[in-house]
Length: 128
Image (cartoon, rainbow, N blue to C red; front, side, top):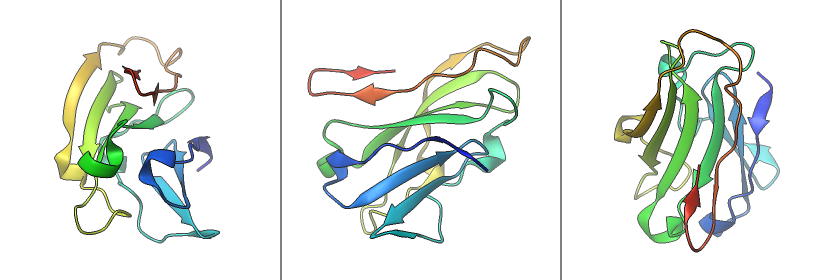
């Protein structure tokens, strides 16, 4: 699956690169090696094809202390979802797919196009 977005996680204070795959997995490249376990794997709730799928990730400005990050994806119905997740307190290379908290759902069932976007954050606000 081709990546849709690959932000360097500077807020993670690590040498990791997070690769967002359209099918719903986020892979970590650490020290030049792709880790075997996705961070997280939400393929069971993502609808991917064309412009649909897991489209973006953004790390909270206080990610190093609160472990929160945000994803933007197309769910099975075709609606667009912006959700918050948390990484594990014991392993920063693992996120809990069960920690999802939906922040915004945008009805978008009729058309499969115009789904693309990116998300990012800075010290003053989080932009999605």
